[in-house]
Length: 147
Image (tube, rainbow, N blue to C red; front, side, top):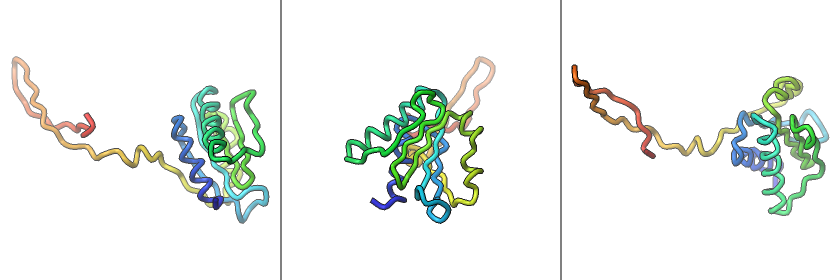
């Protein structure tokens, strides 16, 4: 699998466990140890572990083994090294502190959006009639078509 496609695949696995602020950095012209970084944030130690485990488990199911793992004891920053792609799962505070995006500021990068957010349907306008003892008025409110 091409390393860019692999990085995007990993980035999309992050959303299975509600990871956010997912970014891919292209290191091909800047480093020899990896082609891409996939960086994401989580709000708790438990979520950091869940995201890292999700990536590792899903890829292992496809026969892709992680070459090296770090950070499972503290769970502030878990690193999964798949040789061409290195995954960084951060607690939000740790990500701000280490600021890999600034450190690798010369690297082309892009944000990966949650596919579930892209698929959400546009909202429909629904007329709701509100009544009270004193007056009756009609207002327009937005309501999701899923409701």
